[in-house]
Length: 424
Ligand code: GDP
Ligand code: IMO
Ligand code: MG
Image (cartoon, rainbow, N blue to C red):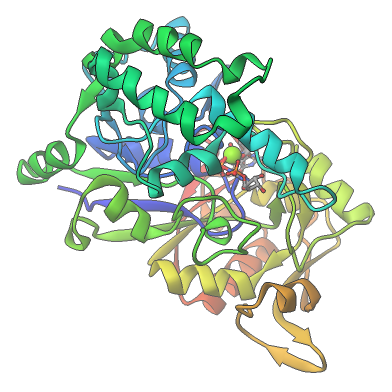
């Protein structure tokens, strides 16, 4: 029996979690997604096939693995249907091995409409959300008037719940000519999916407990990244869920002992999509070069990602709040061409040195990173599968980072393909 692992992003998302979960899924029996929604875009590349998954766990690509979407995820039922059709078109059979928590809240068309209106209302300082309705859906959940998967199985109940939304959201929905405001349409479309969801629905917490009892190995898949956590990230420039390990417990209904190891995914440099403080951001040619070499465009929205050097200060925060045991370092190959590679080891704020992320966002927006410069390796590392085959300077870079963070390196990714990986 191998250990039950949770995989979390340690930066601002897009660290390469999809690839890492796909790799670790080979050793697991069950893969469970615990938070977020279709704001996520997890890319998996196997030979000439590319899969971008938003809601479905990245383990689904492996035939026979059981996949769960937990109660902590907000599910866009129409988006999920599209993803299922996509899998079918790729010859992946999900039937009987993908299950969705009946207690998960739904993201409905009006949530997306509200998301876009709220972004407009934020005027000159929008959050830069993915417009997937995530914030408004979590607001409804916490306000205790959300609509859950289970509500789709009772026509009358669903109708009543939608009628109540019409009252609650009348300022937005009444008189709107946007089709996302049309609750009758939403009702009819949801009814069209109710049979599918009856097949998919499960008590995920209970199923995971049974799997554990049988000695099966479980992989818990996070979305977004630590710095986007609604409590512990760069609030308000964050997403609306707990992207950190605590989210796995509440988002799946498991206890802390159901997790044996925490694997943090760390991109060898930093990216961020959307607004908010990003201390090591490079708005110069080097930043452009990172974007070009790393092909840093959003997997969900196609937006260019902001790019910068690795930030050990924010990574220490990620390691501490998640209790990270080991890291998977991705996209090492993207750094191959640089003469020097910088790493922020501390911040400076008003003449003072900081080795931890300041809690006040206003402070974080004003810090200046203090860099250590390491020599580049100027060698193509793409596809290397042995640590010993890496250039000496690349090994030194990795060892410096892992040493500072006090973690071991579980694996290193040297390309987008499944096989372009070093298992350390
Ligand atoms: P996620 O949201 O954390 O799953 O990451 P995304 O899929 O949004 O973004 C990661 C991108 O980097 C995807 O396009 C991956 O195919 C790609 N990728 C992952 N690992 C590597 C790597 O080691 N090298 C390179 N060059 N690309 C990688
Ligand atoms: P994966 O799982 C990167 C960002 C958005 C925005 C903020 C809030 O692929 O790593 P939201 O739509 O959640 O209300 O947007 O969070 N964001 C992500 N950035 N990767 C993601 O997911 C993200 N999901 C949300 O860009 O800044
Ligand atoms: Mg992504």
